[in-house]
Image (cartoon, rainbow, N blue to C red; front, side):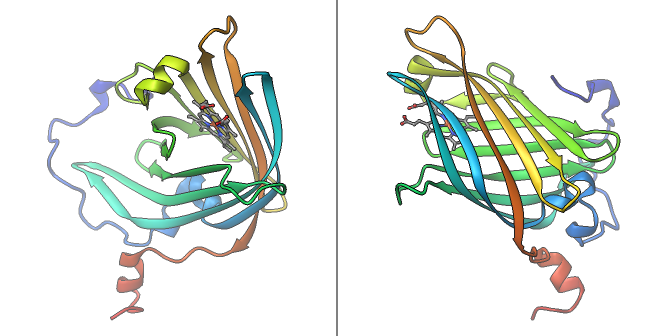
Length: 221
Ligand code: HEM
């Protein structure tokens, strides 16, 4: 699962890179096209219910805003902080809510998505962009200590989440589409359940440059 073998890491784990470009929007590599505020009106969710799989259409809004560069010792990451909010035509109540970060390591091509959802789950997934940069894929697996999944004790008991995989495709018209597959072992059911979500997002507003980029450009006090 770990795309970067341990032997590739430097001996000096403390020294941070110098002369870091403060402008995150210029250093996001394959994540560049995700920056901004997006809406999608054609989402489809397949979720587990007692009477069998439930298929629901949903409305989605995603804010993806650049954050200041982050260094883990020598590992330099550029990223986006995001918030996903989903509801449906039929009900005002939140159907799904999710916050997290997308990170990109220019030196290696590593892409990570860290996500948390309020039912009590956190995922750190990792992957790469395709060679043409037109798609990217991240994945995580329950039980892994690097790119893994943790859930509440009840979810572990009743709706165990075994794996998570997300594929994003950038479309020629500037929109992007995703397919997310969360594999669940539902208590009492013999077969794994593929909790699948998909949508296409259209940009409704441009991103706000990260705080350090604004300071460097003299645009804040
Ligand atoms: C667009 C994204 C998503 C939407 C719209 C969505 C929506 C839903 C809905 C409506 C349910 C049924 C809830 C209920 O019956 O109380 C559900 C169940 C569940 N979802 Fe998601 N989900 C999404 C993504 C995810 C992700 C990324 C994960 C984990 C990595 C996840 C984990 C679960 C689990 C474990 C359940 C079963 C728990 C339960 O039914 O109480 N979901 N989801």
